[in-house]
Image (cartoon, rainbow, N blue to C red; front, side):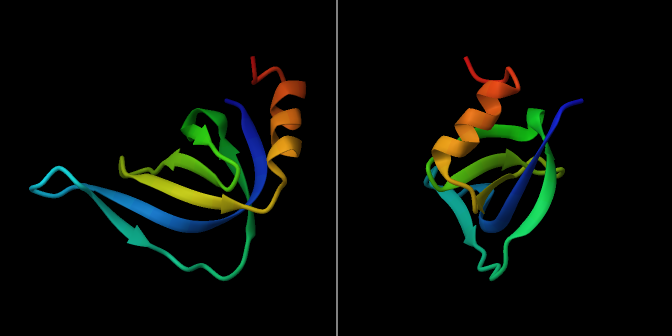
Length: 83
């Protein structure tokens, strides 16, 4: 298993879809960033502001991260995790 250390705070949790096929999203307002060791396989995508991860219950979570996007890409590339 491979892990990456990130400073993150929860932003959104996707609970599924409603009867109109729209995502049911819970906005979370965690005030502080916390450092986490995130298993690489949990990461679905990374944008300039959020990391989309799978949660243990099968839901999706958007975490805001404190690092610069270019710096995070460079870390992933240096670890051989970015093509």
